Length: 403
Image (cartoon, rainbow, N blue to C red):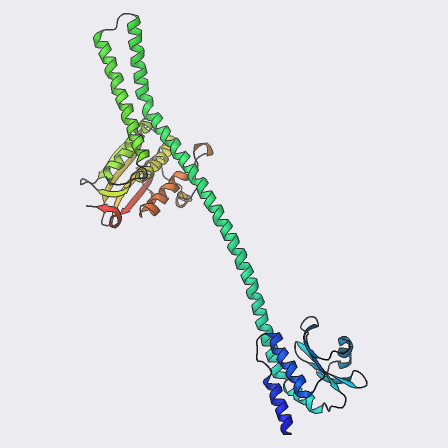
């Protein structure tokens, strides 16, 4: 082989595969091949699915690519006459077709053999470019999917926030309803006593039989019950006012206060309140005042509703507060028969309720769980005891416990 032919082969071979972008890589190949082999025109077509022109250089001549392909039949490289003075060289590859036009005076034997020696490298380079292109397309698809997913996630987050907002509005209303219900229960008996005393005074006065002793008896009864009503207002006012205030409290006192706030409603339902194990030494804890009360009252309301549907003359709720090695433990147990095993692990889920729709939404226990776990850093669990359901509130000593 002549030195000039070696130079042509080397330069053409060196032009292949210098880029992973198909158009850039083929552009260099066609330009180099035209320059080194004195071609009049050169072009490359992708033939993967349809015939798609990618790159062309040189003097464009009129030709029908389909006619040229028909002439080539199944041959991989062919030289065919385009006109009286021009030959067309068709070079078929795995996923492409290269066409060169040459003056008929040029001997194409060396050129065709040289091109044939490049076939493997050209196929590998073109396939690599196509794979990279496919990967880039997939990446773009993935980016689009990611953007769509981000948009969907953003929408879902906004909807979740809106639902949470609605949920806590419902929770506030439910808690307010329970609070008003507890106040109503607390007030019913004192108001009845005041009404009876006032009526008795009026009747005896009209009959002119109201003695000083009767007057003072009725007056004392009215004043005592008014004082009770006033104290009740103070308790509930403090509960509301301090519900977002962090203070040092004595756990036993807060537990007893919660039971005091519901004792009248429990009494009406003939439910006894039993104090069980109570730590003798005051357990001092720093927390937001209203939160622990809210949790205990929600559990107590749950117990009251379970017991009110049970036909028994011996209904009770038992409570305790003590320290173990790692936690302050508050337990609340009832004798309502327990919770069905198939639902016991769901009772802290939002909106889950075993009650009829008219009796509640199931958000009290979920809210209690959220407060104990996420606000107080503790745990809230329930299990079935021998008598009924037993709730365990555990608050870690290493967080807000004070000596």
